[in-house]
Amino acid sequence: MSQSDSSQYTWAGRFSEPTSDLVKRYTASVAFDQRMWRQDIRASLAHATMLARQGIISADDLAAIEHGMAQIVREIEAGTFVWSLDLEDVHLNIEKRLTTLVGDAGKRLHTGRSRNDQVATDIRLYLRDATDDIVALLTEFQRRLLNLAEQEAATALPGFTHLQVAQPVTFGHHLLAYFEMTRRDSERFTDCRRRINRLPLGAAALAGTTYPIDRKLVADLLGFDGVCENSLDAVSDRDFAIEFCAAGALLMMHLSRLSEELVLWMNPCFGFITLADRFCTGSSIMPQKKNPDVPELARGKTGRVYGHLTALLTLMKGQPLAYNKDNQEDKEPLFDTVDTLTDTLRVFAEMIPGITTSPKRMRAALLQGFATATDLADYLTRKGLPFRDAHAAVGLAVRRAEQRGVDLAELSLAELRELSPLVDDDVFAALTLDGSLAARNHIGGTAPTQVLAAIARARARIPGSER
Image: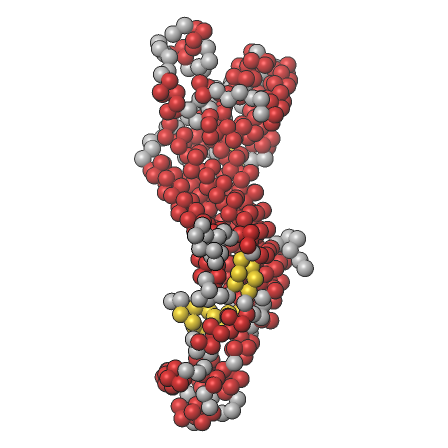
């Protein structure tokens, strides 16, 4: 291979023939890793600043590099930058353009680093930015969830176990369960960010570098909390990316559960809610249809994120230290996970205020399922009947009400006294839906006063959420 043919390849001196076009296409990553161009330039500028301060490159070289990088930023933002498949990835594309613009100063930029620690740094910078964005989007979703919960703090809703009517809750209380789930999700992302925010740069290919670099300076310039303290680990592991995807999978699992309930509640057999038309679609053949496509698709996209988590775990499980080309395959699953989480949170934050409830349908469903049966058992227990005896007595009451086609509250006082002489006329207060809700008046309970108190506590945890 002639010098002119090989000049674009940083490793060309070792090889006697050019890379085949098939291998170029197979090994190139620039089509997807170019999204990290901002992070690559930021890291390169910090590296160059450190090299200059350590006397490894001159002040003139640093100025030229800064000038060239500013030009590259303008070109990429304007859409005039030419991305080359021959240059394989985002790093070599930017380096080649920099060298074209500023000459030897651009060639000196790579002193004391390798693409191995360069890409590991770029990924961490990218993922740190993405984590911050996702936490912000999650917070906005939570704000809107709290607004709807407050609006529906006293709206009676069937609480289900085994998807059978169990006990009355409020719709606001039900929504707060998802607030708690996503609060833990937010904590997981915040905790994960701490492990993302360690600087690999300076590990070079795998063993460090012979140049007198200052890794702490680079970490400070890039806002890292510290440095990766083992050069082999710094370039070879992607556990921080796997942890991010695991947090993402849990978040999507929670949003998928909410999606499933929205789909069920919107079904005319339930009729508990409607979604705003802008979040639904119709049918090409059935004009009456209003399909909840957004929550349905969120359920489907959850499996996509699960798949990416499994892909990254599988990618890493058989790799010896240190860097291997396998790790190029970490980016597409990671990028798609970021995109899926971002898009899902955005659309859900918009969709939540478009939920309209049907309190009448919710109450009607509660009256079909003997939802206050436990309240009757508790009433008898408070009167002195052992709970197991009370449980048996209420079971008989439910059977009688079912035979008559009425709710427990519609049984006469005489019928209830046949079950236990402890029943008095105050029993009906315990059998009403509102009475059942109000009785659960403790932290974590579904009483409307407790729901409002829980919302106040939740808003105090989210800056800017106060009413």
